[in-house]
View 1 (cartoon, helix red, strand yellow):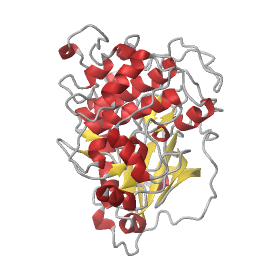
View 2 (cartoon, one colour):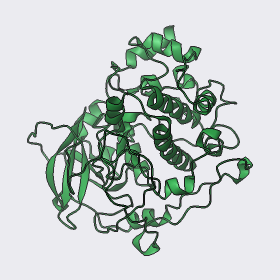
View 3 (cartoon, helix red, strand yellow):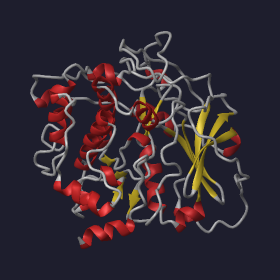
Length: 436
């Protein structure tokens, strides 16, 4: 109990209507500038601020009433190497195949190389339009490029606040990780820069809002809807883990929807490059794996536990472990007793039992087969992961987007006068962020 109380002293107050994150490095603050209203692009493929191509092809699936289905079929994702877009992944089998053949490799080399060759971005390249979200030490703005007229999101972090809240490492980690990854289901970062006051990260703008909002309106998702989003998340996690990156903050608020209804994982403030294990306490209380709560060294398996929590919450409308009192919440997680809704598909329940086990030697995703064990589970029997990664599966919900730059799926925030673009003054913190 002593250890649990120690964790509680570091945890941020948590409301059932939203998932707040906790971190051992800052007692009451999150590492990102928004609770998850971060950015994503209207285009499904990777685009630099100076390069663009378009594309995707959904497959028939009955839409749900909350969102309007697409009126026409989009074009399939272009894989032309000249555009810097990734090459086609190898075949993925979905059942009755030895785990050694479950291989899903996403080739990100072209797009990462394209980023490395880009010119350095600067604030003058963008016209700031409106605020998309605010947080502990910064804001996220919708911007339009003066170079190509496309819309992006700029995450602005005030250096003095980053330092005060002890988020220097998290901010540098976020930058380094985002510049080293490129995947259809991750937010992409196209450049960073800084002035004497702020750090700037230029990201995709994704206009469809949070999956969290749709889940709350729907109360819970039908099995096939939860499966659609889970499949995209599985591929994103598998990709990050192939880079030795642990995400550590999976939750509905951090899954944004693009214009075609596909997810993009955002907010990499807790992500960390971890080849083996780490000990940092961070994440969202409802989603913390037992090994994190017990202050044991933990690794990639913690993300697979969080996937189990996410799937459960999508299917039930609430997480499997919850209590307003964080001590009691963590006790419930450690005890591992779950009340299973009767309407759960038996295959879904079986997969969740294999993800939500405290025994790391039995947890799916952490076994010899890795992510292939998860993808090969019978709950995903109907899923063709090649179509998933190519974005050929029709999304169950299509956001209503009224043209490029539409931000109607994000809350309105007061527009305040900020000190952006300040140079030739004292900068006591610049040396802490040498790579920006």
